[in-house]
Every structure is written in structure tokens, then in C-alpha cells.
Image (cartoon, rainbow, N blue to C red; front, top):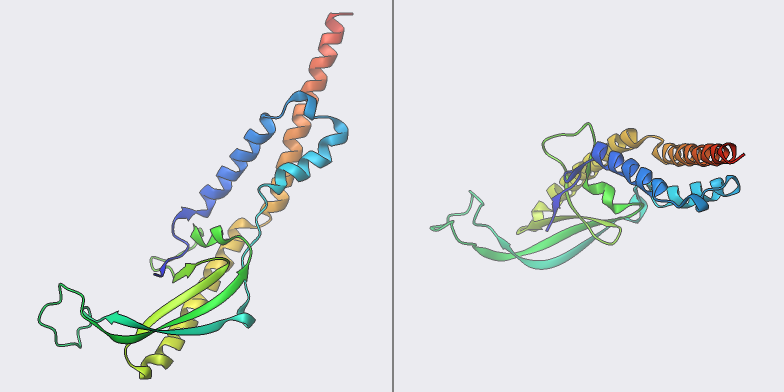
Length: 200
């Protein structure tokens, strides 16, 4: 079943939590692991766990898949039904527009700082975006195609807003790791110098 995308988590909170995790990971390092000649290696190792790979839709590979199904029309006001409290199933078709993508699928759960009250509906499965529709008449196909294009446009708009919010996060994350490591290295060096002075 399709679900609302870009809704579960605020991207601002996600990025803040990543920075907190970076701080914790650096602070949990043993002093013996932090040496001047290991800084570059540590920066790559630690920041590599948190780098964001932004989703890119592979629109040139999108395709439609059509299956037969049973469609519940109990909510259709144009159907003459006695009891609408129960499902009323009729033969129909399920149309799925499948769009592969590269990148982190978790970002489809993140709400950008600029968003609407009506986010796009789709399913994310195995690096594929699936936009689904059910129809009971073949003449509805053109309407479905138009709706699918509108949904795709909305998804792209959300992704663009997310990209603005994330900005240069990957570079910022690396800079943060390096700064924290250099601060710790200085504190270790200062402590060692003080110890030597006290024992002189």
C-alpha cells in the first residue's frame, strides 16, 4: 500500500542527531587511538559512517507494471450501494509506476523545512519508488498517467527542498570530526606536558 513520503522525521532533527552521534563516537575513542599521524585516517573512518548519499531518481528507467486485482468501490459516491460500511469488491486493475533510484532510501522519510500538508504518496522498496493506482475502467488510464506525473513532480520538489536543507552536510561532518579530534589531541598533549613539568 502507498504511504505518505517525507513525513516521519524532520530533516533538521535527523542532522542534529547525526552530529550528536559524531560527537559521541569521537569522545569514546581511547587516547591511544588519537595521534597526529592518524588524524586523517580517523576523519575518513568516522565521518564515513555518517555521510549522506542523496537519492537520485533514475527516470530513464521508469516503467509501468499492470496486474489484475479486486477494487473496493464502497467509497465511490457514483456507485449505488445499500451498505457502504462493508467492502464492495469489483474486478479491476492495479497500475504501478516503478522508478529505480540511487542513494539513501531513508531520506524519503525525512520532512524538509519547506513542505506542505499533503505530501506525495508512494511506496519505497529495495531502492525503487512505487506509485500505485487502482482502476475499474480502462478509460481511467490517461487520468492515472496524469496523476502519476503530478506525484513525480511533487516528489522532485520535496527532494530539491531536502537538498537545500542538507547543503554541504558531508563536508561539514568531516570538518566537525577533524575539529573534535584536533581538540582531543591538544588536550592529550597538554596533559602530557603538564605531567612532565610536575615530574621535572
